[in-house]
Image (cartoon, rainbow over all chains, first blue to last red; front, side, top):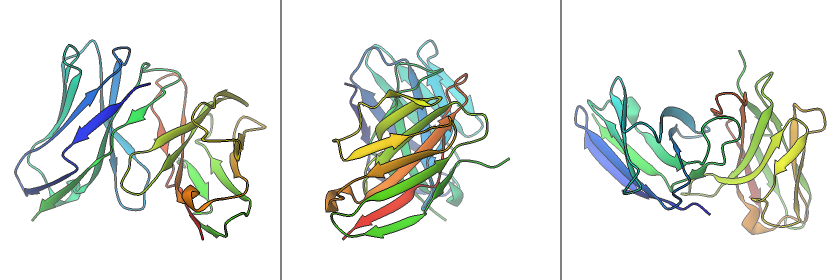
Length: 114
Length: 113
């Protein structure tokens, strides 16, 4: 089955700085890579995703990159704000529509220091 | 509109007891997932429903775990003879089946004493 590794496990940045979270996956059949943000006491919320036919995707302060050859993908948050503090999960799935059998990474706890 | 809701939000039980956890998906969503999230870990897939049927139950850890979705909407995760190792947050997610995007509920925190 799929194995998703994520690092770092914790990340502290000053407000306004950038944060980068990196993930690797093992199954070459994976072609959909969502990122989730989980705040304390809540379920994960999808913040951005990328499909294998795209190398990079950006949404305001958030960007994701994908290197399918190396099986690496990353989340970049620019101009971080205190409300970005949360746990972030990368994930991989062989399908983007219909049934998504999503395998999650272990999570990165991001702390943005005001 | 309402999101995914889960009840109870917290459940404390004793080892050996039976528990039921309920998930109300977003109205009209045909796909429903259950996950288990242990402390400091990512969610771990348990089971996937498409309509009323369990299309993939490969994540259920053993036969103490069972889930139903009799009318294709509300789902119940049932755990028999609970063990301390079952303590975790149980998350439910639903999707429309078209985009595949999963919307998660807040989870049920299960503590087995």
